[in-house]
Image 1 (cartoon, chains in turn blue, brown):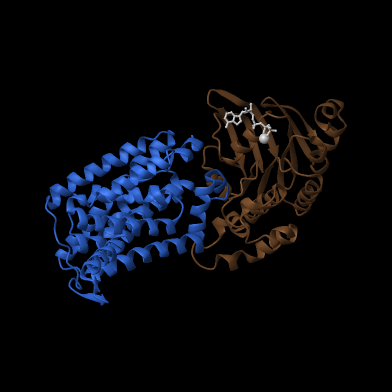
Image 2: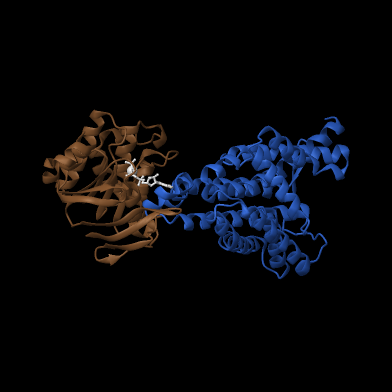
Length: 294
Length: 238
Ligand SMILES: Nc1ncnc2c1ncn2[C@@H]1O[C@H](COP(=O)(O)OP(=O)(O)OP(=O)(O)O)[C@@H](O)[C@H]1O
Ligand SMILES: [Mg+2]
């Protein structure tokens, strides 16, 4: 194959695989929005914290797989905590204070991370760091395959749980009609807490699979929040499939523009995507639904 | 079984319920009749815990329940079939029914099997629901949705069921089917509080009744007596 085309294809494939991680982080927005009509604008910060926790655990000799479990446990707790401590209060008063509150908690998380782990980006070593598979000259590294398999696997697992367990059906019921769900004996606030906890776990998990590819540092948080948010705005807040396609699209475009225009331009496509989506959908992603709720 | 004393409740500034007292003895079928805006739905929401009373007492099986979350009250067996059906539109008919039995079913695992006997009973009562079992609830007709809402509340095996205007917006034929279901339930010994705007059907299937006007009870007594009362006839029998 023409070496130039090969290089582009290589970039596109790597970007697409990373895009699946964006889809997973954006999926966390969908989860909490369905249950409680709010999202965590510190979702990228949870990804970063998950990555740091995983990194720290492997640093003290814990195997990678277990470090994932540890990071997810912390993510679960943090997701739950953000909802309980801040979001529930704002929603009870029918205001949008949760937007500001989750941003502030995110900022706090970043400075906490800088204090604990420092400002520099750190590598997150995994046992299969250097392995790769070649398809017709395009090489895909094992950490990239881990991203794709992990992100898709996590989303599929959660979707199955939503449809095939009574817990999942109850969460869907709360999302459709919280009062009617209460009348069925379902505590709607517990269903909301559960969704935030799962969303936090998904974000932390995303950190442990993204980290080995990108390195881990406090600056990854804001970039990931922005990208995941762009993906969620474009795909809407009810279709997981839409997230996967939008995530792949963004990841591909971003990697190609970084390659063609220089690495400083990498973050631009996410921003353009977000601005376009907001311009084409001026009601935003929650505008309508929140007004209906209040 | 259910006893409310001097209930005051409302939205925002003013009270909609202005000192309501009522009693539903175990095994009885009681009607709550009142015109548009009398406060029947507000009373149903207050009794079921969706609205917290500002004053007054609600005893269910002898225990105070006011102030508890609606889900706790439902788990105690006081279940509301809300006005306007409130089925879970994006979920299937069968999922809606399963949700009615949520507290009894395993959260993960063979919940369908565990609920199959109860599902069977509901499908016997409303065969159309069985035909539509995998259809989205939101795509049902109004009458089918009302049957689904009643089926869902029965899946909870309630000790007392409050039916808030089950006849709202129903065609005569469906109306007949819904009221036949209420008569069947009553014969099976279920305790029922039936809220209706039009008294004719409600008084014919109940033992006793309360007539509400502007947030207070203005008349109460055996349904048969009230049906003969000329004042009631003029205002509510239409
Ligand atoms: N969510 C609400 N917020 C504010 N006021 C309300 C609300 N719901 C009902 N009301 C008011 O409370 C009063 C009683 O309403 P309610 O729905 O309890 O009457 P109802 O007897 O059930 O009437 P209908 O037969 O029309 O269902 C009405 O004046 C209504 O405007
Ligand atoms: Mg009403």
